[in-house]
Length: 442
Image (cartoon, rainbow, N blue to C red; front, side):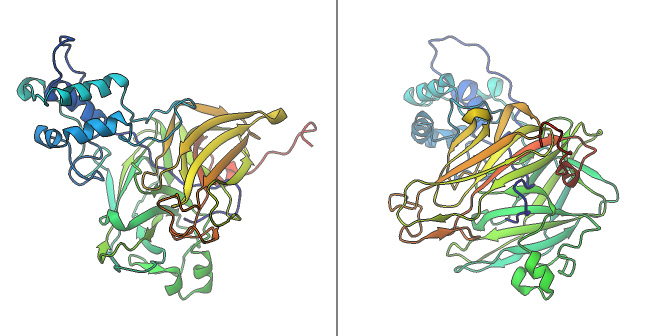
């Protein structure tokens, strides 16, 4: 990922909210055994089918009775242990609108259905149809932009960050309320970021358009140097387990007319050669925006994690330059990531926790506040990460190594992304202009 040279930087996150419109099941006798079509299918639609349907990240679909019946015991055991749906926030801290967790009553319904030998019920009268767009987890996109050329991926070895510049062709400014990135070879994508390059930007000005390239293949020295250090705004970030961006009504990201989008792809080899041609779907705001969404970050890239350290702590903090409304969080680490938290630092040493996450590299989720939080200029925000570089971490590539910041997954990152809403009349650069300090602040 690219990073701006400030403590607070802009990037976007992907929310776990899905677009299911499910009618509540009809009332039935409390002593009747749950049936699939009346009781279980609505639960799968609300909590599972966004991933567990054809073409999505779930390892198997759960859209029909036969599919669910064959997986019934696995479903019962994983939801009872709360391993599925994936959600890693500590429940005592904060409330989040995209929490997909099943209620105790829903878990009981599924468990009782399995224990009753998975009765089907009557589909004709009681089946429910969710409003999911085929091929997307957002409503039908207004525009779909695809990388013009596929990227060839080797079976083995490190793969340098790959870029592809995609002209939008937009002749007017666009406000993006929803966006979704869909790699064609999801198994090879560690993360992907889409940057907004306005028409007056000099970033990667000598790079080819519409074809894949890496920093090392660029002939211009400044382009090579700035490939990993842009201050361009970001539209969207994709990571394992992430889901589309969905902003509240009246909130949106901004793409100036004439912009190009720069797809930055971090691929990892998995033993099988392939190619990838990622697509981006966009849903535009149809009315003038109430608020502009920008995503800031707290980053520490100076850490050195000692070998065999099972609980290494890394901190970053900073102050908001102006008022903003806090919307969501997206922590990012690599394979040694263990825990991550966000806090507000008040006076006299008081710490207000906002989110605590037991980090899971293969399910990098965003956490959207149920109630957006207004914050004043000067608010101190803190991000804290813990890393497990011990042999007990089964994902650890090498517990004997000293670990520093780096692009590859066997290296590490510590990034606390968080989305805020600001006035639609402000861009990110003007938001970062701090007002003059008053007499009491000097």
